[in-house]
Length: 495
Ligand code: HEM
Image (cartoon, rainbow, N blue to C red; front, side, top):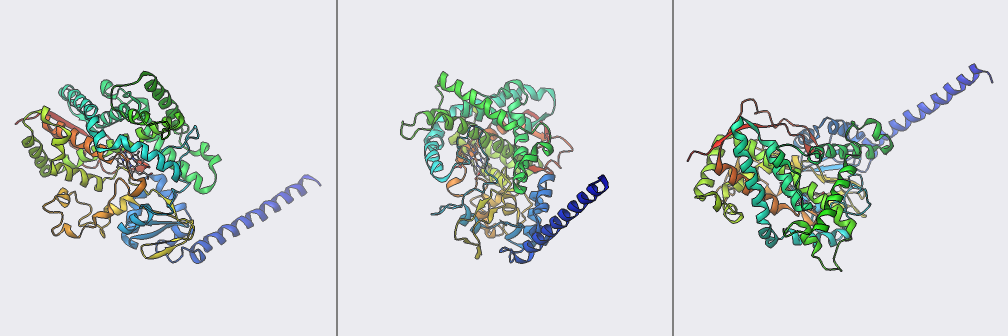
């Protein structure tokens, strides 16, 4: 065979392969739209045909707003990919995430694998999860929270003292400082060591890498959808690859130091290590769980705090009302405690409305429908389908909330929440801490931390937003919100 014949045969083979591939792709697209078991569900045909539109918006960091648009057009249930249904209703929260005999397991595509192979609470199978959650719940009980107050107070005061020094230098980036405080606090609680952010007034490398890590996971998820994980290293932005593994290793060394050193503080490890032999976690489980507690509790709280600062500063009547409530309730900083801030109804309403407007976990936490299928929202969904409530859409849908884009803390106040126009709000649609047996364990500690921090900072300082920050909320969402700096001027409070 001469070269011309060889080339000709290769072209023929390539041609045939291309034709087969094209026919296969067209078959798949047509099947997905017209013959797939999910064909009856509402949604745009392009999204039903292929996962490309979903991936495109995810890549751009705009999936949250696009899904909200789709829910506004199509209603509480939308088919957002060939095999995925997105929900924005209270009923879906209960059916998908609530207590059930046969748990709707986390979608394996979203499940993270720990470098050591040990399971952490966020990804554990049902049996391991029940055991780990029972053990960890001691660390998150009401009595543990009271015992942890000295650590919460320590970091709150440290932040306030640092800001007292920094505020003389001019406007400061409040997002950065709130992030330093929540990472240092949770680092101390999880590993027995803080990250030194408050002392240095700067992001520690671990902290800086958290948003990069979240993006890495989002990219991994997309590669997994296409079954081409091997390609990830060529396309995932440089700097993201391997960040998570590096962080887990650092965390493991820190946990080891804490265990060897011991501690008088009631941090999370204190409760984990005090479990008796039978219930105890293995050393590998302790390591991966300390890391996941730190991840679960740091960026989420930093985001909620930053959001609350933004909404408070862009809504002067809310700011004035908050300041009034906090300063009238305390005659001195020393009086600010978990118990005293627990009584501040308006502060609590501001925090809840922030979590609605700006949920730190704004994504869908996807689950798989178990064998036999399930009825969700009155419609049968076949087994194997990926389903989930899209947090952002559920909290922003005009079907669920009156004036959903307006920041209105009074929709949560005891005196007004059950009166028109808020009586018709479908409040159960908003679950920023998720719902059911795998919902957030740190919910109470997160809210307590937020109340304490804002009470201290609004008691000690008068706040003013710098010009040009009204657009701060125009952020991308890739796993976490990509927060920009938010500059404001703090001055010692005038009373
Ligand atoms: C405003 C702050 C927070 C928000 C919005 C938040 C939200 C969430 C959400 C949505 C989940 C469910 C994740 C999933 O299903 O994959 C979760 C789980 C979890 N969160 Fe939080 N969280 C916050 C703060 C905290 C804090 C401070 C801690 C304490 C360290 C914490 C510890 C956990 C743990 C341990 C889980 C796993 C629970 C389980 O699987 O049983 N969270 N959180």
